[in-house]
Image (cartoon, rainbow, N blue to C red; front, side, top):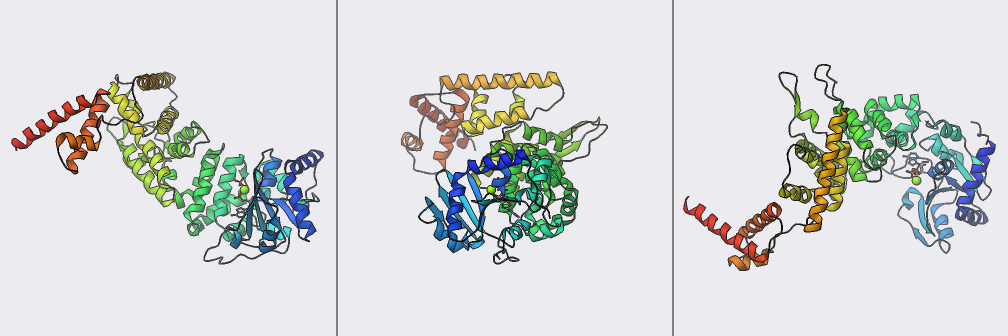
Amino acid sequence: MAQTALTAEQERALVQLVAVYPVADELGRRFAAAGHELYLVGGTVRDTFLGRRQDDLDFATSAAPADTEALLRGWADAVWLTGARFGTISAAKGSYKLEITTFRADAYTLDSRHPEVTYARDMDADLSRRDFTINAMALSLPEHRFVDPFGGLGDLRDGLLRTPVEPETSFSDDPLRMVRMARFVAVLDARADEAAVKAAAAMADRLDVISAERIRDELDRLVCGPAHAAGFDLLVDTGLADRFLPELGALRMQRDPIHHHKDVYRHTLAVVDGVPADDLVLRLAALLHDVGKPATREFHPGGKVTFHHHEVVGARMTRKRMAALRYPKDTIEQVAQLVLLHLRFHGYPEGEWTDGAVRRYVNDAGSPEQLVRLNRLTRADVTTRNRRKAERLRRAMGDLEERISDLREQEEVDRIRPALDGHQIMAHLGIEPGPQVGRAWRMLKEARLERGPMTADEARALLDTWTAAQAGLSDNL
Ligand code: ATP
Ligand code: MG
């Protein structure tokens, strides 16, 4: 294993690397004085070569966790021991978050197969257990000796993802690395080495031992990556996606030469592309918006294909899948709601919506933030090659947004409530708490949505009419 020789340009990059993080040198001197080795390593080194600054600095050290902790106390602004059982001590210094890990000889999580961490004797042994060569480079502190036993710098230049050891061995040690491979394809626009792809395809079922949370964290980064389409292709082609997101591969429905309906999988990736990369909820909603299509597809005589209620089925599938991946409850609700509503706008260009319909649209979106997302998703969903149709939809969406902002100027539309609250309803009707209060409240809210703002007196008059009508109904029974 040859050390990579640095070109003049790389030398300059290295000098910059060090200059960017004076805090790292300072810490290096502290460790050296105590007789320990310290290296800047992993994502920090990789990203600095790519010209991306990180505030999270990864270090590796020969010092045992307890010695690291002792060296940090009195120097760092704060020290955390939450990762100590993995050999990692975390600290804050100024705007930096530091993670200092004792040279490691094995897996990156503790599970039943790896009940405890074992430590490696030196930096090279630690680097050989890392996921990809581009993440297996280190810089010694404070000397600035560049350590690259697996040619990571060359791979970084070539945009190539290779495992330092045989991919079968590496993926056996930690199957999550197969998903990380797709993540780095997506985030770095890199290409995965053929042998690694082959190994992943053969070993995809090994992913089943990995916790949903770890997979989810990688998926979150993947879906926000600029080359997410290549990342998803890798997941689907290798069968990895089937282990944790089978809905994705199912979208690759056969293109039908007679019916000419679009490949839903390609369309989906185009929609992901069309929404901002810094909004995870929106990216996930784009990814999942059509998952209900395969289950609802129907062929009709004459060649028509329909996907009736795929948004309803899709929202249900979205909830289930995201729960299995252990997403937080509110994230699940937001994404599922966007999936459910993603077709709603399409009634708009057909006929003029009443103000009531516009209010309902805003109300169902749930919040101003969700409304912005819904409109973005709806716009991105238009991937038709029919320019006229696309233009018509764009204009209609602009029109709807204008209607919403006009309404906002005239009334409160973002948090529509009835003119009377529960207490006022009870007082007016002379009733106790119970289901009737809820019914009355919902009736008033419906009226508010349909007609717009009303005074408390108008609401009371409405309550009277409603109560009378209800009494009439039960009399007739
Ligand atoms: P990011 O910029 O997204 O944080 P990263 O490469 O720093 O990317 P981390 O998950 O923070 O990714 O991991 C830090 C480093 O630890 C990696 O660069 C890699 O060297 C090593 N590493 C992390 N997870 C694994 C793993 N599952 N198997 C092997 N090495 C890993
Ligand atoms: Mg990192």
